[in-house]
Length: 239
Image 1 (cartoon, rainbow, N blue to C red):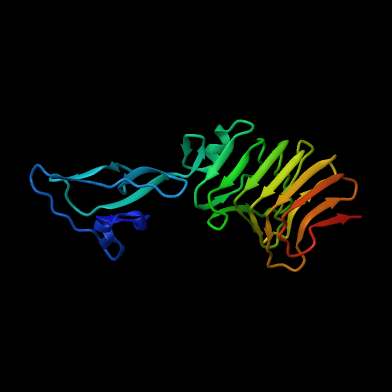
Image 2: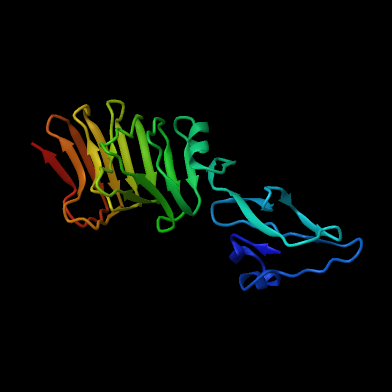
């Protein structure tokens, strides 16, 4: 048996899988129960073979090589777990907190629900914001909060940023790491009295010309900083 993923979560008696396949011998009327485990912020769904069949035990009738892959629910709303961020957002109601396990996730093309996206570890829960040929208006809800996340901009020659619509009123970025954005937060001229809160957030960038917050000259913006950790100018006006 080869455990393809998350081998580090196995107990000592399965330690050999880290260096190679785990060999087993099962006698008549015997069985090996496969272990069930959890990791930080995620629910273990089970072991699955290459045909997507769930495997809970190895019996005397099991033959041949097995490659088993662990599956997890990675995003939670309360007690309910979802395998992907997209599924969780689709099921979310206004005011819900979505808890993201360790790993990398892609920010949706448009977030149109007033929710909180909360990671379990800001170093290990990464939310990628993808670039586009033109800056998208991807924040289309009244109240949006990012907590305990690494917010990472992925762009080459295109634009990548978080940009409001006329529906956006409050944006909170709390206990996060912001990195690799050309412009992290772009406030469009449709904004009227929008409030942005940066709390215990570190801004990093590989670009000398990047903006933390950019606003159009005819927008109105209220800005709050708490326990800030900043590497350069936070707000730039387009005049």
